[in-house]
Image 1 (cartoon, rainbow, N blue to C red):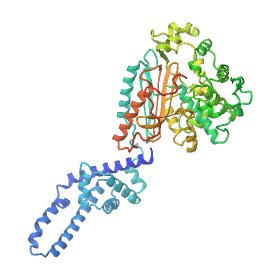
Image 2: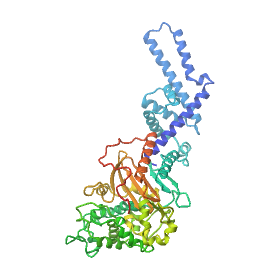
Image 3: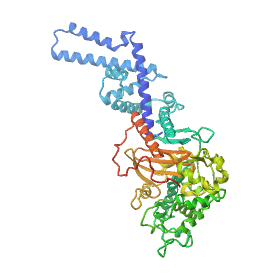
Length: 560
């Protein structure tokens, strides 16, 4: 709970307490004229002309002032008596202090204060601020035990994460799953007060086992910004130079023969280029030949160097540093770099630099470590399913894997290739609540310094993609975001720095239409409306310099 959230909670508690107590006073006080200032006031008004009909204006004014002072005193005494007697302990000096401070602060009479508190709309912003300040100023009159009685420690402050919000997100998620044919999905929304809404809908497998918020999902290319953040943390520490050649850290023989037009570019590729996809590498996930290679060894783990060797064998697609072309190989190279620089394994570094600071323990990087439970069954449909069905290596499993002419279940058969080939470029498996926390922590100052976040945000040539992160605008607000897609999973994560909202979601089907960006936009709009209904002040939309993206595309991580 943030300080702002705690203050709002206290204000609400004070307001409710005051209303209840004063309504009780109103009901109980009507049986005795001596306890009802309103009746006394009427009697005084009627008697004044009889007792002094010939008074001069000056005498009348003086008499009225005296009577007003008497009335104010009676109102004050009754407020103190009612509030003090209705509290869990007798503390009239504390009550007097509070109402006197409010009286002096905003200049209202005790009669007006009474009426204002028991009216239908008792809490203007001025009233809230004055009441809270008065409570704080007068709290020294209470013992710690008395404060604990007013605000029990075991009573949790209300949060922005409500059942109503979770139900609304669940309903939209159900509609989305029905529209695109995906079996199941899990979503997490991290709200500005630190509370979190986690929902899951649909099934995790073909027999209908319900999807759960405790499921681990293969987040594919969303692994890239996580790896980038580790690299940039090492840049902060001076262990890596962002524009240094990769060979500075992997040695001059890390790879050879990366030749284009007679020039070997292997010694020239920089750290920046492998993070922002200007390194010239091809994307293996779009290469039919790579699929054939992978299908021939489904039960054999891919080593990172094998991915690098494959890319070098294909050669540069362009002169490194002159163009942008999305690929996974560069972030696999980044994984090799962080291991070489630190002497630690990549999954250990992600845990040290990312998941521990973000309080996200349920995030894993196979194949050196795995979650405690298997990811949901993974399904492919459409043209991708047709392509995969022709792979020779899948033939022994195809009959069992095929659900229909359109859908294949890839959880049938060995998982070694699928869980290892992406590694630091696309292999992380995580629960969605942890992914949402990580995505916020990478860009809110928890993990990286502000100047490092600015470096993270430096865009590549002719694109809005930066050093492993997509800069965009969604529903009128700037985002840091990334998509992910591997055979069987489609995922998306985004963080709104101006709203302090983080959203993460995954589904066990690829491709999906509507895509993940579409449902993420709908969830964002639901959350924004929820914040506004709860009095949260939001910045005006459409004021960022970021470039809007179509809702149906996350621009990155289609596959890989």
